[in-house]
Length: 175
Image (tube, rainbow, N blue to C red; front, side, top):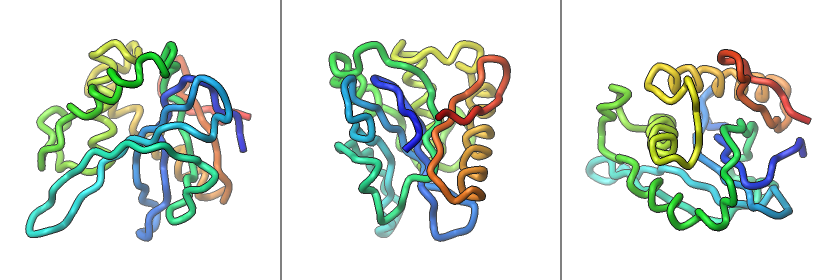
């Protein structure tokens, strides 16, 4: 498996049954190995009479997510001592809006929109530093690059680890 970094936040993409679409989630690697084991954070919906969104967090092993294999992990930022900050980080993610519509990004809620809302909240909370990307248009640029990484990984047919470039919205493959 390509190189993952300790104590780091990634955006994970898992392929869906609809071509060229992904399930989006966040993943924090542990401070110490193995780095394929960490915590997955995502939003799922229950299509009962109306959509109800649920925030989920659970220990995850990237090598064992077989029902929907992970095809790409895009490095967002290192989180200084993620183990020490885990409770506060999970509280921040648990407070990310799960309403039917994102007023920040002006679109219907989905796992992808929730990840964008989460990036906003984590940047505002000081957990990560998106720098010039820490605004709505910057996060939308990150979204475009994550989609690009997912499409490249799908085309190659292998799991890939990518990182966002410092200068503009360029994704580089790692490992």
